[in-house]
Image 1 (cartoon, helix red, strand yellow):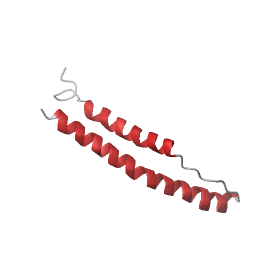
Image 2: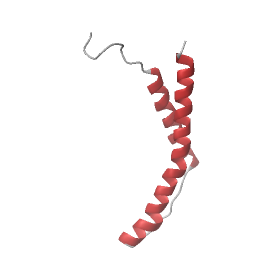
Image 3: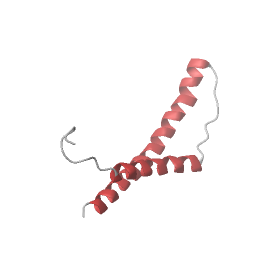
Length: 81
């Protein structure tokens, strides 16, 4: 009864986490590439964000959340079996 709404909630949580991780990850990568590498090592490189890779990251977050929602631990205290 509760498994349907619970799975929807976990998938939406994974989707939100995946969508939020994309701009945060690009921001961290840009900081590393354009600021840190240049100041610390004296060299630079181009930053390429391919949409397929970003979509795979979002799909991974949704899939991991879905698997976490499907898993149900055994009932009762640990070692009760």
